[in-house]
Length: 170
Image (cartoon, one colour):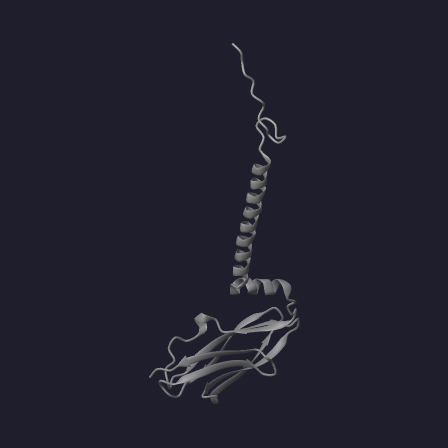
């Protein structure tokens, strides 16, 4: 019996258990596509995040020089009266914070306007030490029921202002 010998298979130099040149090219192409898809997903996530207000606000705080000395003025949501009754005094509470680096005497006004015209105003003065925050109260009396008023708290000679729109009830 004679045995027939077959010629060895061509492996393009890959050797036993190796891959052919075509398979290697496919693996590299697949890796490139996976990388491109991953980069596209990452870019989409980043661009979406940059369009969210809280993300852009935090980035602005990180990259923007903030003043070292400033005054804070605000009305907390819990300090806005729920019922504005016409003809009844209504206390308006607001916060004032001094971060000016020195003690400051603030002259403030609480003004009730209707149609751009001042209907009533309350003025006051507060000395606030540096680094201190204080709750202040001004009182206004809306005259007419069912009307829309704008309440404005401002500091004389300064740019800080707070506006709140309110409708009165009878």
